[in-house]
Image 1 (cartoon, rainbow, N blue to C red):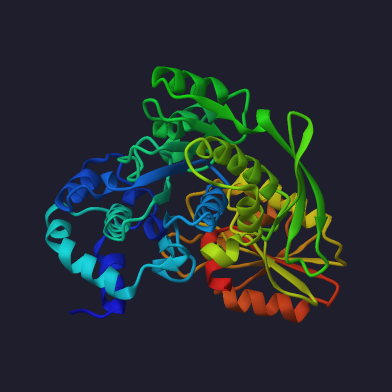
Image 2 (image 1 turned 120 degrees about the vertical axis):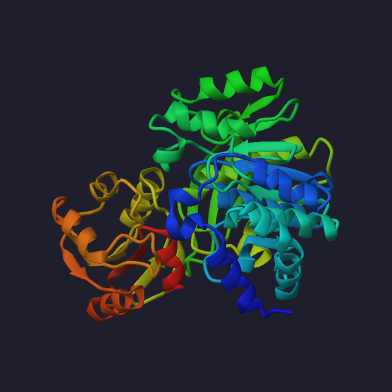
Length: 430
């Protein structure tokens, strides 16, 4: 029997992993996942699932829905990616990560298939999650897509509900250069007769979704046509924020408390509430459960890295937003925080459109350009060079920890330190 560390090293090194090496690890095909799951007795057919795609917000929506269902008394599997610190974060039941032994045993069991078909890292983790959820007889599994939807490895399930949070520019080399092309890929999770929730409707993409939904006879619900949200309050200790939620112009959920910070969470909450309305037809989810679950998402599910406050004096915040759509939301949040000076610890991966992102960043900040310790990271010196074209000034640091330490040394107690640009920068900061 191998140790957990040896097993994880085997998976990371033996299999092409998108997080590490980028597009060459992306398999535009569901054959391997179907083959793996067939060898396991098709575990994906043994539980109810909810399938979630979208450019941004799908992690928050997945975790919040899981929190609601488990608070309602159900046994809930949750599959998300990537992980921040431990691989096991990807696969949870009622907030508890998959055990090290379960990872070891699954890998040993599936190794002949690995050697035979040479799947990607993501394909193996999807099969592992489905097998684990089936074995543990979950009532629901909330499944977040990895990339896109139509050809994403998770897309071998037939869910009871599909959710598409929003569409923005990200992973264009794989999903398409226009919003319509990206929407077409995400719309691939819409299944025959299965209701679909669209979180943020958009003139450029709504036609793509309605066309696909009509073709599949799938009832379609536009969350932002049903609900709207007013941001009302953030607690002095930054532990929670309150929203007033309106349905058809009438106050429907007053002072709904969320432990997920960031103004952008109001869009995710609206998406979740629309999903709950559909689920409530068949499953018992009271308003009391709803309030309790949304107030305790982090505690219930272990979600991290979303406007996560790491310290005060100076206030230090990390956020995993890594594309234009997500960073614009985070920048609104930064501007709403009082600070004397802004310090930004920033790094990116090498397959993003750096110019599109760097042009958004505030010119008045001090920058600490760095890179995550992975092959796909963009070198800090190249990043700094590109940043000067956008009048962003700062120094370079070979590791995230050195960059964060420098920012803390230079910052006054009334300053703000923001850490971001990539999920992997946040992972190393945590």
